[in-house]
Length: 265
Image 1 (cartoon, rainbow, N blue to C red):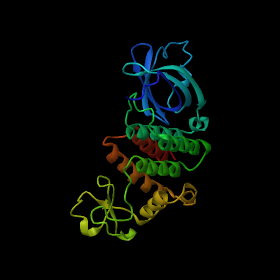
Image 2 (tube, rainbow, N blue to C red):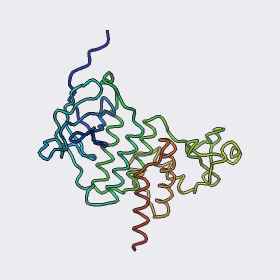
Image 3 (cartoon, one colour):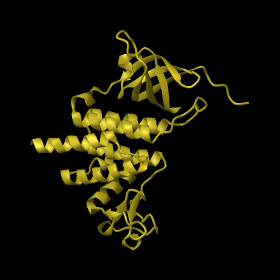
Image 4 (cartoon, rainbow, N blue to C red):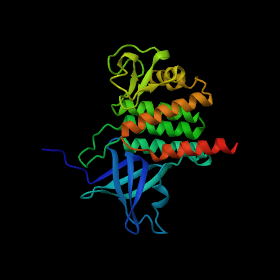
């Protein structure tokens, strides 16, 4: 016999997003360590006197009690554990954090009531650690790029930065092209197989290899000048768009905000 589904779930969670449901309710999307992504209804949260409202905003880590309903869970209790206040005093960090939430949402499957034994702890731990790094003042580009790389790994979309995705030949960083659709580098001999592949700067490719294969502390020693940081961001945003198969609103906002900041100087 299948295991009986518990009537309630008590779990830690990170709020990824929410959307309105009727006049007073919201559907809140959580990332949890043992059920993955879960949608739940927060009843009455839009009413002025709601006790749940401040605890269920995106970019909050909460202790939450979810009652299982027919189609969606229902939030019965929620208590904020962390709001990462350091993110809210810097637009670049805040927009980068929202980007982390968006790509996590896109690359995580919705889970039904029968998935309470899902091991989503690696993804949950990655998102939590990355938000802590952004909030405490780590380099925004470094924290974001290491998150993207690890998220792709966990999700089964590990990009290939060392060998040609078509023929598995080791790639010289000085002669590399890359394809977001193929998910990695392409050697000159296989360019006809992936005509969409474009050149990638040797320095960008070297840093991508360091981020993918080394611990966070090793990658943190890499000095990113503006040109290198922009190159890394362009490659990873293109890769994330191709992997999620849709435009990423937060990534576009980051690019526009950075361009506006440069123009204002």
